[in-house]
Amino acid sequence: MTGGSSPDQATLLARAAWSRMVEPGDAVAGALVATLGPVDALAWARHTAQGPAALGGVPVPEELRGMTGATSARLARAAARWAPRLSELDPRRELRSVERLGGHLLVPEDPAWPVALDDLGLTAPLCLWVRGSAPVEQVLARAVAVIGARACTAYGEHVTAQMCAEAVREGWTVVSGGAYGIDAVAHRVALAVEGRTVAFLAGGVDRLYPAGNARLLEAVLAGGGLVVSEVPPGSVPSRTRFLQRNRLIAAVGRATLVVEAAWRSGALNTAGHAAALLRPVGAVPGPVTSASSAGCHRLLREGAAVCVTDGPELLELLGASGDHVPEADGGPVLPQDGLSPDQRRLLDALPLRRPADPESLARAAGLAVPEVLSALGGLELRGLAVRQEGRWRRGTPGGTRHG
Image 1 (cartoon, rainbow, N blue to C red):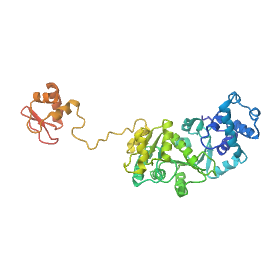
Image 2: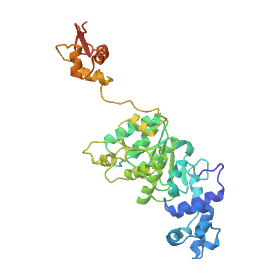
Image 3: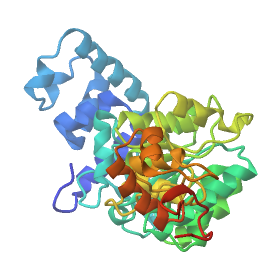
Image 4: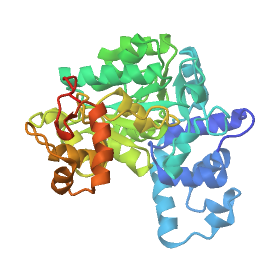
């Protein structure tokens, strides 16, 4: 939906007005703006608020002129809920407000628009209010969403720190919601390792919320990161806006990592949005007795997320060009690791004390004599087989070999 040049002032003002007039995630508004364009859609909404015979007063495509039944009724209900806010629209004032904060309004017509948000379809944000000077499309080009419980544990903090640090070192931007707990740890660690991080707020970017994290969010801005919202300055956060905010975090992340989440958690809402967008979801397992990890275990049990236990596994989830597939970690490296199937069968058949001839070993292992002789060579090189006068017994790696 991005264009090749900067949007005109009329488009900016119209989209700023829409962000004040409708609540986040309003699919009817999204459909109307997509059909008419933000300027004509706003004119339609203003005209509709003046009386019932609105459709004839503005240029309306055939798709809207022919609407009947449920579709038309849905549009009428939407227009009615938007009408009370029309009288208080002042997009110029809100643009000045964000500019005073060193920010700007970003709209889908701008080439800098993060196209990952377009995957939200008709519920995509109508614009973004952005604080911070970093180029949005570059900062979000390689982003990982990290979310979790506000009341996190020391275990959750440790795991978040380890994984975020590794992701940042590999050039990923950490995206979260600026809340207490896992969100705050993710932001802090990204800054500590001199990476970039982005906080999506449920209220206006002039209201750094929660207040207890205001200094952290200021540090995000000072560190070259961004603070972003789809609602204009002065907007207060609410439960529904928090839930709608979560879809933005899920959309911009190449993958979403849930570190700790209770059985009923906002983090699970974000994970649900990510899964619906076909974004990979990872969940960190915790102690089975921990209520803080019950939501993560639920995601894993239901197959909605894959298990992520360390930084390399997070990078694998992100799919960074196949460069970060972790090596299998089966614990300590053992001498018998890497044996062929024949070698494994023969190793099981080798006696511990009294050596046996190849024919006896073939019968015990269920192999042909030539297969036994071939496998014995590899086992002998590893010290797992010892030859004694033409017979063989099991050896101890590093032990004495007898010819």
